[in-house]
Image (cartoon, rainbow, N blue to C red; front, side, top):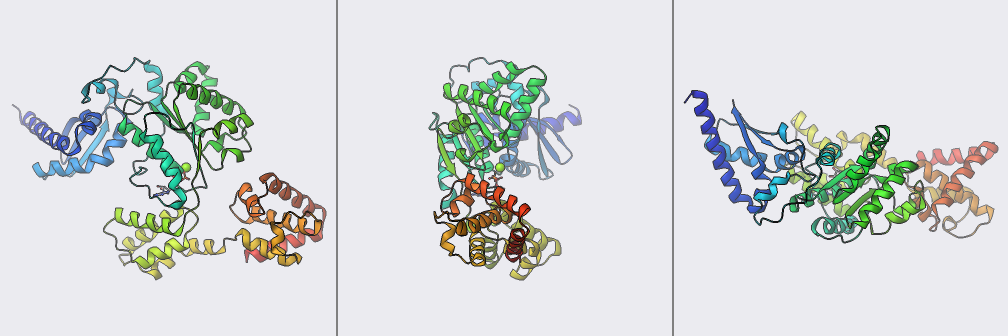
Length: 468
Ligand code: ADP
Ligand code: MG
């Protein structure tokens, strides 16, 4: 045996030991569905290279088992310092979830072979599905009052084999965890039922695929592809606002899948009934199943999220006071909260000084200033009422007399200009008015500003007062 041959066979038998150990640790199902698909490629220098058949599978296996494989390997051979998992070239056409069809055979309880499915759409599926973020799992999702309902609904969809409600519609403002929940559903279904064909993609990608199919005269292929899935997940459906042909196609896909009792999950930034740019029939279909809102965060939820992040990033030492400070100050959404925490940690590790309340305020001064300046609808109502000398209560009253209706419209206008609130949200704060009323107010104030210089000046003055 050559030198090289001996090294290879040694590495191979190490790999077999590592695999046997993993098998014992993870149990039969996980092993059969995921780890049995790993192949040893080579050991070169200080790295071990393993392969899996699909990109999707790599994204699943690498973050969960990469470190463990390395640790087990190092027990045998301390010279190894990295494990790399690559996608096998020959296996590119994977099953929607992960395991290619023959994986069925290695499952603990053999069952009838899956019905044969054409390979064309499968390859396509693998190509167009979005990459899933391994961090966006249920395990990493912190549950609190604002998101408990959406979270429970997402779990239900991911953990039941039948279709509990169709569609599940998750909505809420930016950065509140909608995409995280959708990825988590995908991960969980694929973990439990690797035979399921799941596709997750953004509404934008759906449109892009549709347009491409039109251009290349492959609408049949497009239809076949999307109608062949067991679970369809479309993120950020508000992107389809005003895009009639795409909506129409989505509508048909939607109906075809519902007829076949396949699960659909959709997310958006508003509730279905507030999707103004959607056709009425589409709006009503989207609201058919379960509609779950992810609400803005609470102090408790923000604290929970910060604590979980700090735990994950162990090794960093952050005083509880700093966490409390962040949870109190960065209230907009989870994405900004995470960003703030990361900045604080990165800064401290760069300059090599411990994290303190002072250093935190310094590092985040721009962000904190923007937050302090953020005007609320209540501020606007109060200031406008004072300015026009009416009661604040008139902002929400039903009275239509011009002397209260006009200031109310000005306040709605300023709320639209100066806050991040959506039209429906603004409407709610003004005595539960419809979003169309707010839209009308915005238009009306704009017209008056053009026509009446005195009025324009009033509005400008109010704006400056509020922004100061
Ligand atoms: P959305 O799709 O609603 O705009 P994302 O799902 O992209 O928001 O979430 C933004 C960031 O906040 C992500 O990094 C996500 O992991 C994190 N996040 C949101 N909600 C939670 C939560 N409840 N627990 C942990 N992380 C969260
Ligand atoms: Mg999102």
